[in-house]
Length: 238
Image (tube, rainbow, N blue to C red; front, side):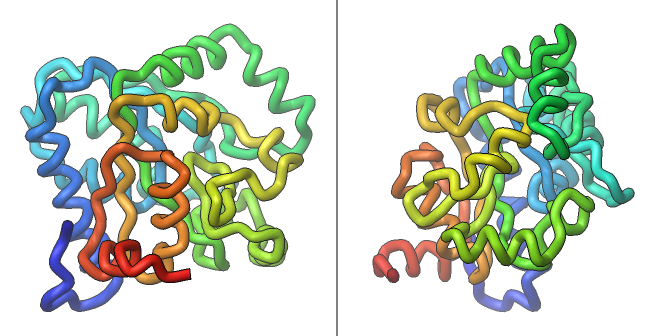
């Protein structure tokens, strides 16, 4: 749990939380043979905080698509490469957009031999590292060009509290828009629930509801967060 004492702003809190996640990964034993990771600002910050030699021989695999419609820093590819190289391991990238316009296109890409092999590797990862996306105009999906602010607002109307591995969930951890979910490429959330090591890194007031959903629906085995978020969870706020 990260102290919020002296935190300057949300960016400062994110960096502190990322540092805590990097420290946790460095101390994690046994060292995961394969680490499945999502993408986003928090994961990118973690990759920056991980020092060379944080592990020896950890292979990293993307577990959801990333190729964005708009150029932006901290893509899944850059994050995966950094974590793997600093951990003296190999990286496997998922060469696909996170969300496709047509479900037929998504199915065709998912069944392509090279993409299917990456998804199979991600589904069999020995540990997962992921964060939570917010359900508002600041969503990474909006910044990346996958969704518009109006589309995210409609997801919120349907009950979305945020996204996990690119999939928008409600307060019970259930998919809020099955049609959108069908066009989203990545491992199913069920793999996170069945994993022995699923590390969620979630911090900040805007993600309290998402953190609660992740914890109560069994999407993580470890939550790395800040003290305000932890207190909100323990208080069982509605």
